[in-house]
Length: 288
Ligand code: NAP
Image 1 (tube, rainbow, N blue to C red):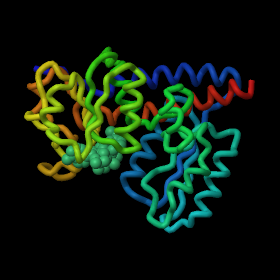
Image 2: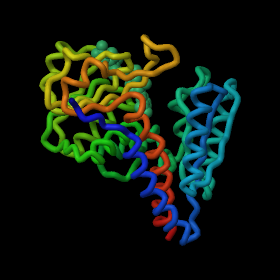
Image 3: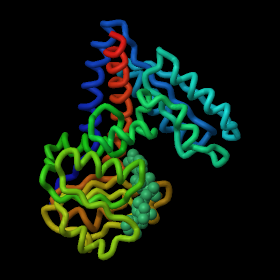
């Protein structure tokens, strides 16, 4: 029977740390504040936003919700990003992506101050992640994977880690963060040949594929740690989500595995709030 690595305890530990750090900042009259910028009324985005705002409030982090119409023009979005980026009372900005198709995302992100880019979307933060200098913000999902591994004392140094997926929001930054912790990292993608055999050889497998139940029992071997980043509509159950790993088939074949839901995804909001606190700390140090 494998160990199930749930995210709730990880998130709680991060939030507790945040709470203490917010108290310290408040003693110096610094009040961490998060701005959440959403275009349109997608139900998933609204649910996520409500959860972020509630969690922020519980930790003493102030927040501001900014909503633009889905039909919003490039200039309107860039003006709002400029305003939030320049506002000294706002420390972190979360811009919900993907943006509507009329928006040039790359151009818009140039108006997001990298020091406030708590979800690591900007080129300024890519550079920090690539340089491994810990001065920027990595996207929250790969950071959540690293926090989960750390919480469960799963050392990656010297281990063979296979990351399946090479997107800019998950696979690539995750590979860089793992490399920064001295893992030996292989990145697989849709053109990778003989993936199941490659996967079996890894000590740790991180699946960020975006395909429901893609990693099955033919991919894994005993003693492996399997981290499932995927969030997909479950093809077998209505209104349910499942991961990129076929949990039922894999669970008993490996040493440890994250579930979906209640795995990596449970940690991402805590990371986002921690990044807001870090942004406030950094700004305070720069000003002080
Ligand atoms: P993405 O942009 O669609 O990237 C998917 C990656 O998987 C691509 O690099 C693609 O390779 C690779 N891939 C696709 N089919 C493959 C195959 N047959 N064999 C090997 N590799 C294959 O997705 P993403 O944004 O990185 O997200 C990945 C998963 O994480 C999704 O399920 C998403 O919902 C989930 N996610 C979760 C969270 C969270 O908080 N837990 C946050 C963000 C995303 P190519 O580059 O060759 O096309």
